[in-house]
Length: 413
Image 1 (cartoon, helix red, strand yellow):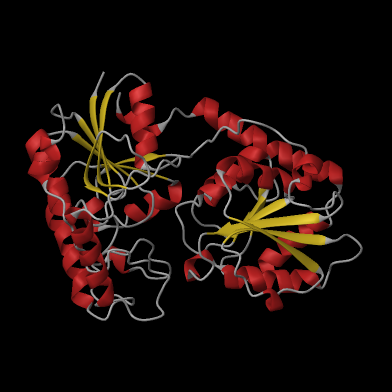
Image 2: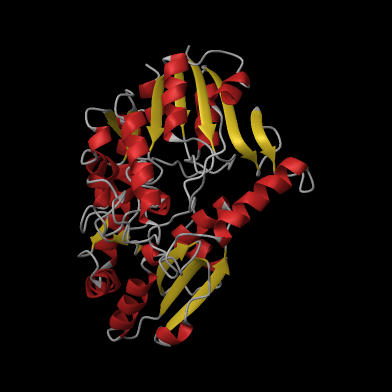
């Protein structure tokens, strides 16, 4: 049994976030403890610094004021969204001594999740120096790599020092943060956990050379099954329609690639014949409907809970992930687990899960016409071949579950 400390900015309960790791480790019999900067989503986490449920507390009001002040004087170039500078000044309010004082033991393993506003490179170094614990960083995105952005997209400066950041007016913010990482992380024996896409990038970063790297693939278990007919009734979609599913928290985020999706749908619509097409658009439904041919019906149920999300996958013929940079998205994992083929650019988890014309369609990078080709492939596909590809998806996920133990168990060996 290991003594494990899990650190995170927040206490979001969704699978893949730090709180879910903490619960899984505890359920596996280890002595685990969870500390977050904010308590925002749940009321029963072990320890935190700021209670977001108490909106009028001095601590919460001070925290929100500082966040808004920094946003007001943001150094991010207006209109530059794809680089995802959430912590726009690389400002951290964590404190090593205070963090460890909340923990009832000296940890042997420290897992560091989402860390914006909380855990700086210096704190990671101090945590290692004070405890000599194994420091594990699951790569939820690529914030670890460079000078502060969560996804570099077309920028490769994370390999060389982030000296001329394309997203910031004050370039020094990114280069200083990068230098801090080099100073404090270069000699800490970190263990990085990520997809093959994540780790390939990490190997190019000077201060991550020689670190232990563990490849991981999320293998969600879907708790129920539904036929396409049953699932479509819940969204008011006809049985015979060809259903294309997609979704995003914000379609305005350039990184999510919705411009490519819209162009692909317009291209694909010229080939629509007698079989009707429905776009099942989850999440932010503020898409420009005039950009989509009226041959395609749009069904926008908004943001769904997890159970309803699975029903949406069962209703769909294909799921499109048009992201141009991503560690996941985890929606790809869910889609494959439900037996719904995925059309994606060759990035993120798609490189591990989307086998071309076996579990989906890998489109040429940044090519909307290639996404349209993938749509045509499935639109014109014979039912027998489609069912085989759907079965391939389920079989792949089942095989991965058997072959791969969860990464948190591997790092605790």
